[in-house]
Image 1 (cartoon, rainbow, N blue to C red):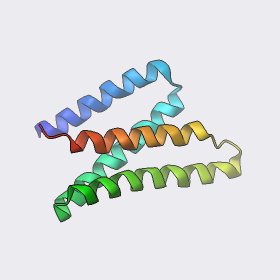
Image 2 (image 1 turned 90 degrees about the horizontal axis):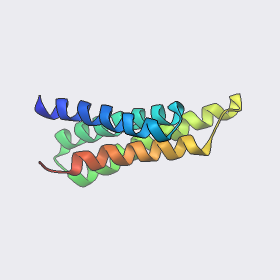
Image 3 (image 1 turned 135 degrees about the vertical axis):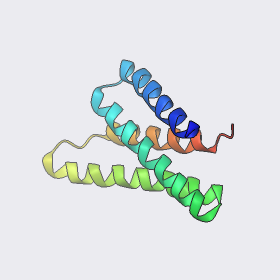
Length: 102
């Protein structure tokens, strides 16, 4: 329970800091990838007990979903490289947070 509260608090804090310097669309991309990477990391870690595998799966899953979303956006003409950068930042922050032991 404490971990979940910490995770939610850090997400809100990091989103508010990031929002001061980035457009809301980029904040949304980073936040969603943060959530996807942490959820995937947690699931894989609890299923396998392997931190390295959890890191790879968490990061890769979040970035892959971000890439798929940008591919989908190409048809609408609104794909941006900056969105992919925000996805990578969010995915990296998510798996890095969970690698830190308290």
